[in-house]
Amino acid sequence: MKRILEIHHLTVRFGPRTILKDVSFSVHEGEIVSLIGPNGAGKTTLFNVISGLVQASAGDVIFLGRPITGWPPYKVCRAGIARTFQIARPFPDMSAEENVLIGLWFGKNFARSDGVLSKASEAAALLDLVGLHDKRHTPGKELTLSEQRRLEVARALATHPTLLLLDEIAAGLSPHAVNQAAQLVLSLRDRGMTILLVDHFLNLTARVSHRLVALDQGEKIVEGSPQEVLHHPEVLSAYLGEREPAEEV
Amino acid sequence: MKKKPIPSFLIFWAVILVLALWPLVTAHPQWVCRVFTMAFLYATVAMAWNLTALSGLISLGHAAYFGLGAYGAALMDHYGSGNPAVTLTTAALAAGVYGAVCAAVFRNLRGATFALVSLAAVEIPKVIADNWESVTYGSLGFVGIRPLPLVHMGRVTVDFGGDLTAQYYALLVVLLAGTWVHFKAIHSRWGWALRSIREDEQAAGVLGVPVYPVRWSVMTLSALLTGLCGGLYAHLHGFVEPPVVFSTHLSAMPLVLSILGGRFRWFGPALGALVLYPLDQLVLHPVLPAGHAAVYGLVIVASVLFFPKGLGLRKK
Ligand SMILES: Nc1ncnc2c1ncn2[C@@H]1O[C@H](COP(=O)(O)OP(=O)(O)OP(=O)(O)O)[C@@H](O)[C@H]1O
Ligand SMILES: [Mg+2]
Image (cartoon, rainbow over all chains, first blue to last red; front, side, top):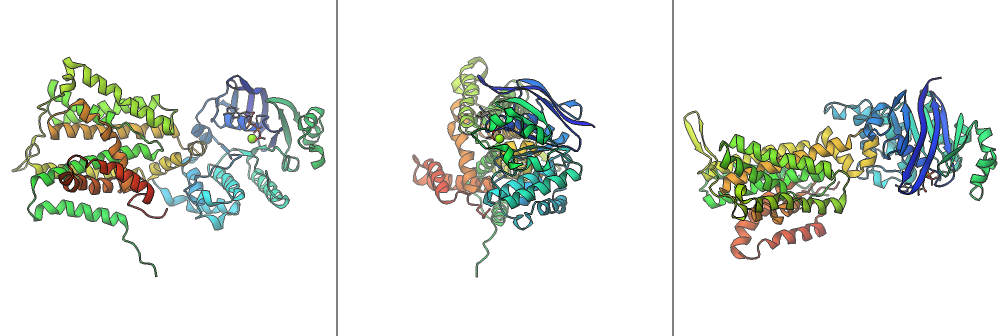
């Protein structure tokens, strides 16, 4: 299987603190991989490094065989990696539709000229996919949290990614909504997208993932099938006092 | 039933139309022409300033670019060629290069930090102009900068140096060109890039907007246009001195004019300038020769309190 993403010995330091320590793993074509770990394990930081928002102190990120370490975010995006933010950050004064249009105009298939309104139907289709069609004229700041999170997904898809990084899209959702999110993730996989998920509460992971990578305090502790990882003693102890992961499976 | 308000861009075009026709149809006192000529110049400065603001950064130091433009033109006129094509290019380049350097050096600064540092950045060219006496004549400044030239258009000769009506129309054209650039910075793909950067630059970046290249180039363009205006100022006034062309007032004015007219409307900064500058010079100055400039402070306070989106207000 083709390797889409390879993380090689990645280390991130913020001042004296080491946030990620020598983390390595890879994601193959068509896979859904989940990154799990308790609060502060460094999952979001890893996403930030991949998407170019945070500089690695050491190590490499390889995408489709090419090192992209240190690339600015827009280049990473245009190479084919899109992400959502754990705390949704819609453009507050733009409508939901305009939020999506930014991804369409500037992402991988970016427009080179002002053929600006030509992508409205594509935007509508993406908003439909995440169930925001009725809210297309609502400004980002007036959407509910769950709507903002769905907008994050639609906007990321608008950039035509090969690899999609989803940061906690199911956190705080009702069981019904978690099911919907799982369906969405699976349908994206069926369209040929490779997906790296971050899931702290293990809502989605066990249902959709092929493999899990467990992080704790910046270090990878184990990687493997959901069954193996969720029953691994170190994972259990990392989650101890937080939540018992095994009971969710 | 709600009455539809007149769209404010129509007000803008009406103002432009009146300004374009008025000297043709009635007697036009030269000093009034002069005031409007300067209003057109400052309107252009305001739009140039707003280009930077549209990318989400409030600069308090555009006097640096205006002054560099004025000194660039004055130095070129004095030591090199007096041809305005040459002096004005020098003006734009001097400011543009400084703007490009500032945009690169201040790359990671935002908000109040950026504003303060931009304010400080005025001091560097100002101190040089003030102290390098063998070249710039120090605090005495330059006098006798050549006025804009005579231009022969077919059989007609227009004296842009001496005829204030001709200057009025020349600057009106500059204003319209500036308005076009400013329009594009809002209504185009480039405008959407600036807007996304202004609203959330990290989100913009991961959606494929080249944040730094876009911001660097818009700041350079902003400096370049401000410098061009500084160069025009040097030729219109015939003299430049550091406290005037590098003044804090020049840094604050585009901010006031833009806030008054509406920073997010293509015609906003220009409308603000066309309303406030003549009001200040023609109405308030004769009444309150000493305190008239206070209106700029008042306008900031009043518009922030009552018209947070500017006169060109439309619910957004
Ligand atoms: N910009 C920053 N500067 C300093 N420390 C940071 C910064 N960003 C994150 N950290 C620290 O890095 C550690 C890892 O944070 P990160 O957000 O990556 O964790 P996470 O695994 O995503 O946690 P959560 O499940 O709560 O989202 C935390 O201790 C956090 O305080
Ligand atoms: Mg996180």
